[in-house]
Image (cartoon, rainbow, N blue to C red; front, side, top):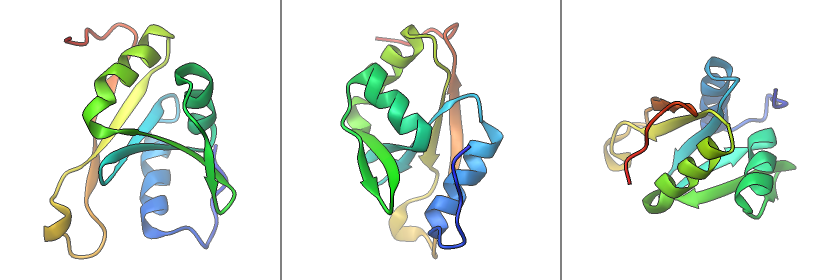
Length: 115
């Protein structure tokens, strides 16, 4: 599990809560126009998807544009991984403080993904 810190931002605390609920999944965490992956999920995405891993505050991270997410999900599923997709469930402009998010899909290798 990812190392948490008292210095985590509110969005990272939110991320950790969803990751605790879906520890066996790669968590695609929506931040604006990207789905971000952190820690071990980012490293896995680097290996399986060929993404570039960057670091912020010594946290590995990798992301994909939201408009291209289905092809990345398909590739992870075909490689045998489970994915939890955590979306913003309110408009950022309407949010008072942290944007509300929730896991809207859990995709497994047995899930059919439409083209």
